Length: 266
Image (cartoon, rainbow, N blue to C red; front, side, top):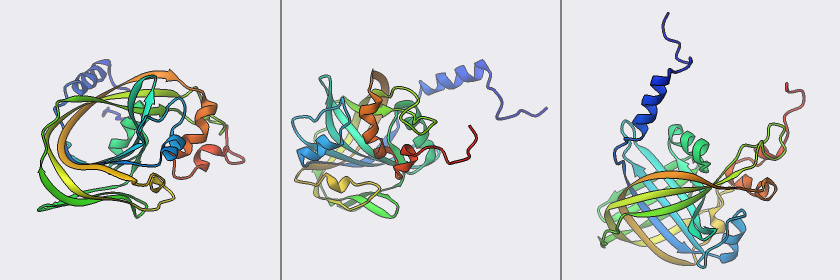
């Protein structure tokens, strides 16, 4: 009988897949990073407990194309600075990706707020444009002119904060207590250039990053980097405290707040 592809994998196949995942080569991305100060009250408003604002109300937009074997990937993130139990890091509000394959692992393993979207990084001579778009709206656009090279930073670790959860089957709360994940990213940079330009935030009901306006532009860079990551569960969190924020993850809040349709089989 021909192999049934939905059938169970053997223990040897599972072990081989796991081993292959530990030997991935460096995967380099080319991207624009924009950093700005915004309204401190706005940053505080978007942070679910137990995350707290840092001393400086920073927003970080990352817009990259990734050199994945077999297919190109566009990947982006808009995150605010946050701190948890003395660890400073970033809390991403939205992470547009151009392929479904890039969504699944990050959402299911780490709880990353990834969504399908359009990611653009274009350079023509000294002119660079990068944008994140969903539902036909380029809700973040970075434009500018590339200047001289910047000194390469030493390899460094950066922490991102994610909440991993499953909405309850009966439409009320969660199936189990959500967890706060610390995702530790190890970054190496091989090229870095200064960009003189601006950040444009456009109104979108789906991705309302315009609520985090650019008060002071800290800087824009264009560079090439590679990143690997590992995650740990920092703590279980109170679902009642997190529930008011989970609309951040969905385009339609009713996906998480309503119950099953009448007459559905249980």
